Length: 183
Image (cartoon, rainbow, N blue to C red):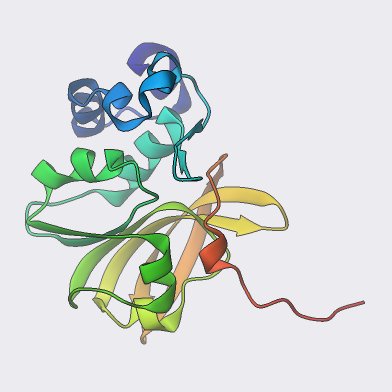
């Protein structure tokens, strides 16, 4: 995974390679899917969600630049893999599911880093309200059927995101933008 997927895709940060080498992905997929835990695509979980590909999660972790003092809020699709990667790198980590994230049901506030381990069409204001001013954001961003890795910051109480790479990331339907009428 490290030499054949991560490094060739530009995931070269030492802390990312170390964590992904230490945490066995097969522990985070259903038992019958352990043999495909390392394929370079999303792996289905039993809860109807997906464990993103190693490259997607490696890029997310690399872009997050977690720090020992970070208070992290992680929106997790149910695998727990990203939480295991992040936990020893940060000061504290709170984990919520996509339903709670979309509704802004968050256990605290003042988070310095938001990681959404999936792609969203929008980040609701109710979720952003729990982040510290200038908090960092790493998420998948879905638009017109294409998913991208996006990074950003909280500015003026809103999220400002910049796409950095087209990447297949499982979409969290709970973060869908309202449908609008158009020609």
